[in-house]
Length: 497
Image (cartoon, rainbow, N blue to C red):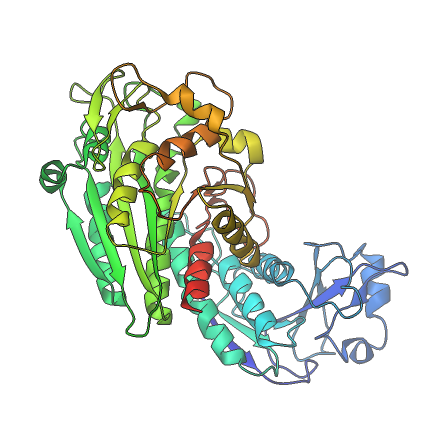
């Protein structure tokens, strides 16, 4: 596991480490060293710029080059990472750019024992960004690897900075990175090892250790309690469903936030079976519950002055003789009846029970998080979540916080004309709009129907961002990303205000 510390030295030339990371900006006359690398060019006899030019370094964002120092520095290896254009005069460095730069560097140095970041770190915000990006970039999931070929992550990471409150920024980064890594591990775990009861057990053990109070409802309690949506989705599986309630309170808290996460530990589509090409990554369909779990653990460890509750709506969506059928009707926890037209629109069915239950905690806001629709991917792609809400100000707040945390999000509307398509001839509402268009929006409109009047609610659809099927980039690995965990922590910090 990678450890991180801060060192206030201003002499990077003599700092002892195995690899020294510096930043360069792209410029008209070639790459230019960024703040943090003072004195390096002199130590290298003024030849660094020429060397970088010779090996084709342009300073573009995400670019990485390794240069041996031949004894001119205490570090035997100099790693140059592109930062793109320099900030305009008077503008500070963007935190997300620093996070990604640190992540790229640390990923490129896997297997290195000691790495020092001599990157822009003038204040605690920048130090925290570098520490978090580096730690997230060091993540690897090797639980099921037996070949031993994957290099170990960086052992020790040092951020070089004399900024005030740097240590506190590093400590926050460690806590948040641990929670994001926890979520990534859960998303990457195969469904054979992460069924609803097992997820609930992990939540109970880890949550309790972090100082959370934990309550778990099994299939019998769910049925007796009227959680018709969770029961209906889980009834086709040999692994019965669970609802986990996590709670954190602070004696000085003035606000309460409630987070609800979709936790489908595997989604076959049920009787409305998915094609195999759409099923092979459905172990990630619990990413929303993972984000809620990780965020609650971080909130507790950070000791935020806010009350927070989290609901993990856990089920496995499988086809069998006991599975729910298209045209079945169930009664939700809110008391409304739902006609199931498509069993592969199951995430919204577990969420409505969690949302209605969360409303009983009288929170100031409810935010649900889900890998909910393929339509999110069509509309916004793999890296940008859609945010919808019954309150315009809350929607914009969620988008703003996500941006601050470096998690792409975009506010989306809830067009009233789409509601009629959810009418059912036999129940209060149907779980699917008959038209394929606007599927992300109609799913959110369906959820909104179960939010009590007067409750501020937002929905985050992160079907794409939760799982990276492409190559690693920045601090984001291939596979589980831990998406939206940081956004939820950021929201809690804002309401702790």
